[in-house]
Length: 489
Ligand code: BG6
Image (tube, rainbow, N blue to C red; front, side, top):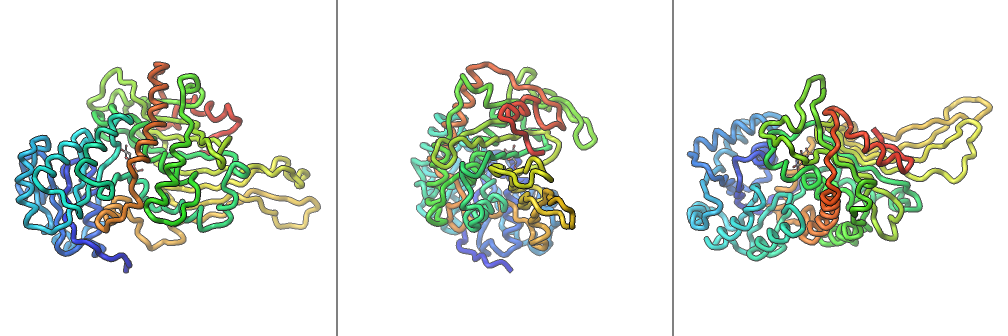
């Protein structure tokens, strides 16, 4: 049995309840919490969307999506209990008066409310105003904001200002679902619970770091949203920078929300901006074309449904990021992320420095350096490459490369992998902000991301084509090869 306690009987109000995120992630996450006994018996789930729907239609919609997206299959008893929590509320998000109807629905319920904004961020301000005018924001209430918050630093400030004018910072939960992933959380444990790594984690011992977040999916019918964002805003500004900051931060004094966030912020602020002068050496943008993936032919980005013929939005990004501080000067962090790559595959490779002198030259000319691989997904695990003597009685000391491999599925086989949204939803209900991003972090991440985006704009470079099913444009290989290094595939 799990040891987590139900701490709040909050009502969950899902704005954008009929949307993609809600169908695939939020509703299944809430169902799983119910399954685990972690939703209070009085908690309701209020689905809010623009369309006119009856309660029955909403219930059918939820059932259908739970059937599709709950991998383990549904439990009839839990499903019935979960369905009984559902309420559908039509709402015109921009019509401030229509929030009065929502107020009527909510007044029958509990005191604490979690407002989950899963709509385009441009209307976060309207929703906040609507809730405020209808008297629906009380000190105990919380608001969850999906990323990307804004399109750049300036627009993110506008959105944050609007939301912050009615909610205080301790009520605001900016979600980056990578922070709820088991393996991302494990970075803290790996770094700060193992002296082996704590004491070797700096420029004196580490040669470079690679962070790869590859997906085989394309844009999954979201051309409108995606084309406006691109891989830089959709993945790098948030997920990759959060991973990077956890990897590079100084040890926090404790695990409290602000101790960890203070340290992450320092890393984000120390990122060296990319400039018009160095953008071609330090970054690569790509866009996928038609190609073979998992045995089938898939269309290119410009042939996706709803595509704009001439779009120059990137679906792949590789960047040599550098951190200007005492610990990391001279250690590149190579970031790489893309759609339509050969497989869903996310990992971190920490490449340690070579030994200064090789006493095994006679049997092994070039001693490889140790390499730590942290497999984020799938096949979650941690692997350390070490050198080892080959057993035997030969005159020469034969040695070989070996792996110490901790596979999570082998070590913790029976544990269900908890989805990031499930964990994060529970954290919001319980009022714990540790796994959410503070406003200053979002802004520092935008400062750096904007430097890249503006440098691209200034050089007017089109994204380089890469075939679906490949590891990105050839120039991403040159990006790292220029430094005499190579991507670990
Ligand atoms: C989302 C992006 O934040 O993360 C999507 O908007 C992306 O484009 C997704 O596909 C990847 O998440 P995960 O958990 O599947 O790695």
